[in-house]
Image (cartoon, rainbow, N blue to C red; front, top):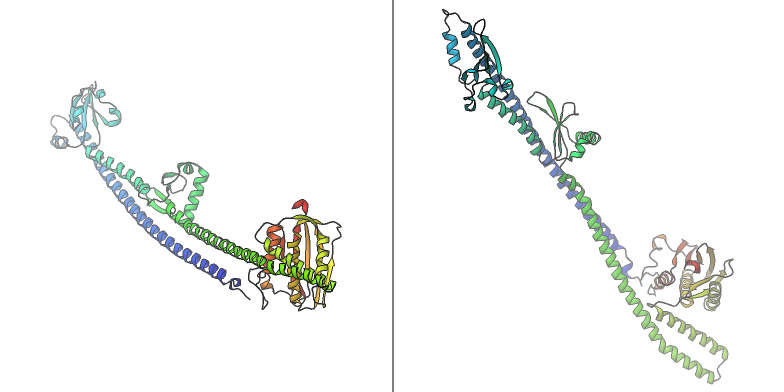
Length: 504
């Protein structure tokens, strides 16, 4: 009987489904991130174009103000020259033109100051200065005004103080604010991306945004940061209002950088769920199988109890009937064997009692028992280790059951004709018991399946012998049972490995 649970289609389907899920997640996530990156790049380009346009606007405004500044300087100079000309004109000279120039001054702040510092004439000055009588009463006047000294006669002179017009002053403030706002726009409106603005040499930092200040002030980190930004995105060149060239470096926003890690995190979560689900399913399925095997074993032991009792009674009755003693002896051996089998089944599911046993003695007793119950064309050899005393902690009944299962499988593989060799070897912490046959061997693809519950190549059988054998060795004796080697049409070697008592 071949149980369907031996088919690996369920695992294969799970692996294929998981792979498909991973591929779909990675494809969709990468597509989404790529679209977000393109959109972010598009917004950065729009922002850069806007900054470039604003820079050109600021440049134009600065040139316009330069023209105004030049015109203001000409007006102030003309006004001062007119005052000087009027002062130096002779009595018969026509100064009406100069007087009209002086009278037309409505914007240039000016004042005429005598040699003693007294303010004689004021023009276009702030109201707060109207009550000032002396020049030194105006705080910081030397920096606020340009001056022009004019001589009235050989012994007297006056000084004309003048400055740029209020209109030009206001325009200059507007320009300064515009320049300041320009850099604020570069940093604030940088669509939340890390940005650095440098001069044309890329060494002097003009401003930066969305960056840790400690990284900016560390020259090595700053150089690495600029190099990384430059490798990721082509820097944007902008002409500043002072006609200096600057470079704008930027990189992906932190949100996009985190999104690039999201598919891997998502994939890890899916893997955890898939593995957890598979482990939970395997554990629950194995637990259910264990319950079934334990139940079947105990029920088998219970059912064997009645016929065994009957056979024991019949044996006693035959003794009274003076039946041949040799016949009764063989019947008693078989009844004892049935009792042993019933004990084995009854111990499945419960923790067996382990005792220190001489392995050589256990194997010799097993060989004597087995030789009387195998076909005559089967030869059995026992090769013991050179170590005289191999005392191991084991349950001899369950261990003998494992050997019996292995030998029965070997006999079936040899079709009742061949040789079984049981060899013991001692290796460091382990003692190995190899059961070798000369049968048809086990194909490579089936060597891992033979321990699967329900797997069997026999027309009659439950496929539980090797499963229970491995469980006895692995769970009860803390050892190992596996296929050491197998060659088609030459034979198979099954190995039992048990730890020595000092390592057990």
